[in-house]
Length: 500
Ligand SMILES: *[C@@H]1O[C@H](CO)[C@@H](O)[C@H](O)[C@H]1NC(C)=O
Ligand SMILES: *[C@@H]1O[C@H](CO)[C@@H](O)[C@H](O)[C@H]1NC(C)=O
Ligand SMILES: *[C@@H]1O[C@H](CO)[C@@H](O)[C@H](O)[C@H]1NC(C)=O
Ligand SMILES: *[C@@H]1O[C@H](CO)[C@@H](O)[C@H](O)[C@H]1NC(C)=O
Image (cartoon, rainbow, N blue to C red; front, side, top):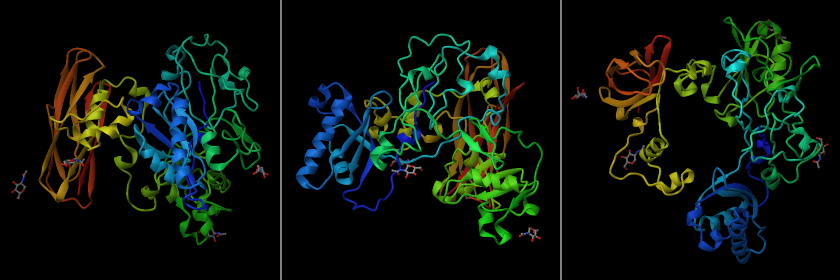
């Protein structure tokens, strides 16, 4: 496994107090190497090539303003993308945009961790199904991004592991309290990335943070009773199995209660799931501790506005659901597929789905063309030679995706839209699927054909879905689904209809 310090790699961009012209941000720069000047390209080594680009930027910026600080190269990228990370002023960025081969500059930003391990949430059980011994593959290398690891943790014991695959070219990077002997046949590599962080914030305070892949805090939490629990997923208790009342503390008259800070009123909280609003401090531990102290059984954490709808990975002492700001649990708006997509992933069933919606890389590129991305936008993640086909008109809805979005523009009530999908049989060779439709409000849905009969594996069959608007709905959107059913297989796609 390979761990990196994502916290240190992705850098927060803030408006700083220093003068705007002097302020520098760290950017990830995508370059199209094939379009870079021949002299630069000939340098071969990408670090050297990009340093030459930065040097040329510095020459320009020194001519214009000798007060300007030098641009700095932070990292060079050559595996997943071509490009580099650099610390640049706004002016230096402008110069860089004129360099041949420049594709884009993305300012670095600080991201919160997302949940990495939710075995229970995913319905996985140790020793069973996907996690049974007979199902465990060997010779698979898994990469993780994390804030760090404790290599001594029992889950990294390599007893019974085969030799490290010979194709492994990674490294076990040494650093503070992390030596090569911390890697073994299970934890085969570890690296840490912190230059982006230092480029923006200055030197790392080594009192708080190890300069290595070692974790000093992330996975350990101290409970209210002083007990220290270690684990990747901090809530390891049983999931709630029966419906439980929900408590909103906003009306208590105590402002801190809304945020689940301070002592919570036990007579309002006991036995309930408490809605806690996020504040501007990242303190979900404290909130769930307060809820637990007041005998609450669960917490719904509403992320503060500045997190938007990005859900953060929070260690939870109580069963906790996190919702994005716009879900606004206090209102009567129920969550729909726009909030939860196709729903809760069920990995046990997903590995044996019956039918799949196959998509090739080319289909995604055509999809991007249909959204009017330019060939140079798309060049960011292709080899730069792709151009959108001129003679074929793709519609976004034609992507062979297992969901449907029908948009009636201009308030058309009785319009009709039709999409085609192709499914591939990966279940039982001779099988027959019948369609079941949960019709969204305000439309009728026609699926043709209604039965798909397969006689071999890998066989592809297509169907068409037509949605006809019929009546005015009170809202701007409505939802339903389409499910192909055969024996134990249920292949479901959400349908979203919007009126604009
Ligand atoms: C580093 O962190 C420690 C502990 O939080 C703090 O006391 C110290 O002042 C910090 N040092 C610097 C240089 O910020
Ligand atoms: C706790 O809530 C109960 C029920 O609403 C109320 O009677 C009581 O005054 C509250 N206690 C405090 C300390 O606010
Ligand atoms: C893309 O551009 C075409 C032609 O200008 C336009 O008709 C179409 O609506 C655009 N598509 C999107 C998704 O913006
Ligand atoms: C929609 O309704 C209008 C007015 O009743 C009618 O002229 C039109 O033909 C209808 N369109 C469809 C697709 O049914």
